[in-house]
Image (cartoon, rainbow, N blue to C red):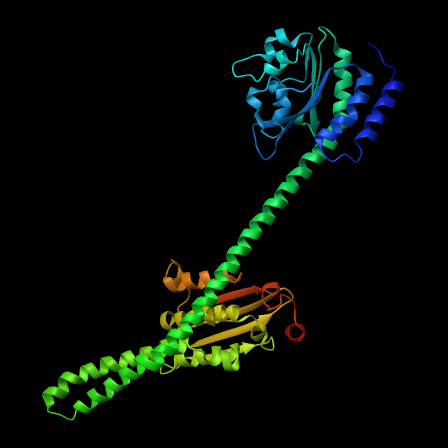
Length: 425
């Protein structure tokens, strides 16, 4: 067989034009089958494509005779069972056979070779599809006629394969990118659904906390206060009674104070009335009140009270995280100063709680219920929570970062936020 270089060039250009704009393997095969047939006749044409996301597997696309190989487009097959496995793994440069039905190279234990017999594929040419020296698949041509092909056919098939390989490589990675995008979109959808569900749960929990706070205030606290007054009155009786009841009075007094703290934490309070910054200031004052030595507290808000623009559930979650951070700093860090900063940049709002106490040692394990609650609240509202050393002063810094796109009630940046951002910059 001899084809002039001029004719080959014309055919190759025709193949190049035929594949332009085709967006899938089957369409490419359909377009080039006729042009390739003009170079040498074939009864079956297919390509085997290795799958980057499923190592060790390949799929086949075919035109002409339909075989079981073509069914693997939806069900990838093992390369180890392919009749041309040695070509797909780069062990041989090509396959040329005059009669595949009787060629032992195509038939071995577990070989997926039944289509060779069922479709009567005798003469066969197989050449690799390669990009940068890596095999990404194979171009396969077959004829029912024995001894149909020779070395010249291998040469032409390889030239066609070299022409097609870059295009097929682009299709492969385009499919991978599409699959990855769909998977990422689905994952984000599931994450957002879980986040919104958890957010609704948090809102319901906060509402219930308020009801509990009001109930404790109206009933339990009033009862304990009345009991405390009665017991206090008994102190005027003989010493033995006074001594017995004194300890009880102290216990009940402690209980009342603890209940007051719970109520303040649960019922509508300073944040609802005066805003987030004032609520943080009140929490600091309440936490450090009566501490010896005295602890200095500072709240700095350079955002013009952006947090007050947030939804109620987000604002509450952030306050609970800050509240726990303040409690941890005072109870475990023995600081001289606690500072809360509220800042904003183009993308995020950042709230930090810094102390100059004993530092990170108390947080090394990081598995206390308080820290776990902080992490859970941060995850629910899509905030990033970081614990780090407060260099150079020593102590601990807790940073809560909220993406601006999740911050406002509407999801858009408000005029107030824009002004605050300008002030922060």
